[in-house]
Length: 293
Image (cartoon, rainbow, N blue to C red; front, side, top):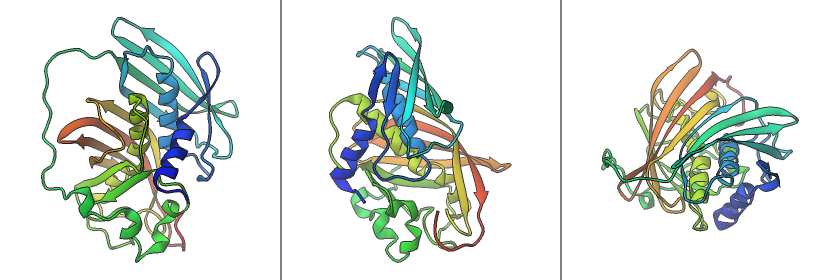
């Protein structure tokens, strides 16, 4: 299992797409991964592909994606980028992720030069302990090693620190709460390219967001709890940031019904609201069986 800078370098390798033709890219898979491709990886790679076709003075300010089919982690993914528009200050791209000739994910992303205008932002939550005061997930779950699940089997390029318990807690041990708050950052140094930082945050945004739906009910992932699948994902990037420095991810779930839950999150760094996320996921209850999927 890779951790620290080794895991970060592995993620950077996954985000380093091969251009095989104009607007056509091939995305590598991590050396060790899940049977299904992690949604944040697909979204991050799709954004890299789109970003490489955009003029250098424009930075992504939003993306909207749909997960259509599960991806196979044993095969590379091909990303096809369509140039929708290049205007005076905006560029729009549509990226389709393909495996075996079938679409597994598609995404629209908009890029902007940035302009002067009105400025405001809601304040950062002030009742959150600092990241150094919260142990990483691996330490939080030392008393329940069987609950580590996928975290114990795959590279961990993102240091994630939950306040007040996570969806990997043992069943019955997680208190219900309206807000789920985590500190996160790349667990190593990233290059200075702003696109890389945005793509790493895109990857990280899918790690914990859907968990906020379970948090409203004190529920957990795995046997006796729930399995979740991302259906769509949207991100808005408001201000520059570094993904290798601590970011507070404050998320909540305003509604859940009919087997689906909606989650929304805000990212803060150095007191500034840097990005926002929305996601809907499919949640299915699991029977009491040994082990964690």
